[in-house]
Image 1 (cartoon, rainbow over the protein chains, first blue to last red):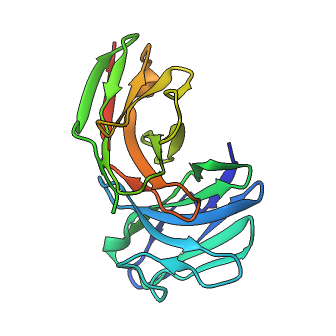
Image 2: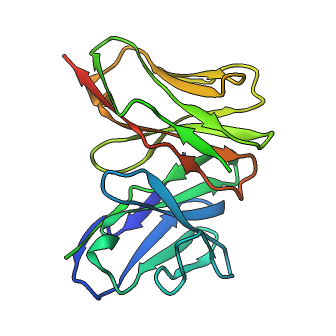
Length: 115
Length: 115
């Protein structure tokens, strides 16, 4: 399985501020995704992080609110901007490895609480 | 469009017994993959097992097996010899074949293993 790390693992933030979450993978991957899991809910895809180009966002998610970078094949960041309590969720990075295209792995997640 | 249905919000099983978690799906894609993930209270998503739609045999990974019935569009997870550490949320997910496609998740089943 891929070794995926996320920073921070958890944070408590004030309304109106922004938080950048980092995702680092131990080997090259073909695809990187960012998911959100609101309390008591299932996972929802925010966007696909594309290397060297703008991310592809799902319906209901916009770049101004969730800017994403992916400067290389093993690293990506997700920023949650101008946060409100409704942004309190677990944010998870997910990857498809070049060597295992049929499987998909998740990072340990970032648990965000917005006050 | 793809849809995953998990009809069991919660399940109980005694330690050392086997348990089946139900998952049905709907898709118009001719080729797809089915996944099961475990999410303990820590929040991480742990990949358990994968079944491709054209795989001839049901997938197995240690104590986990996937009862894949294509005609019924079901992909139930069977956990044998349950352990206390199996207590967690379990999510069924599907993805059209091709790494560019996103995972669609079910609502999850909370499994509680008792003594």
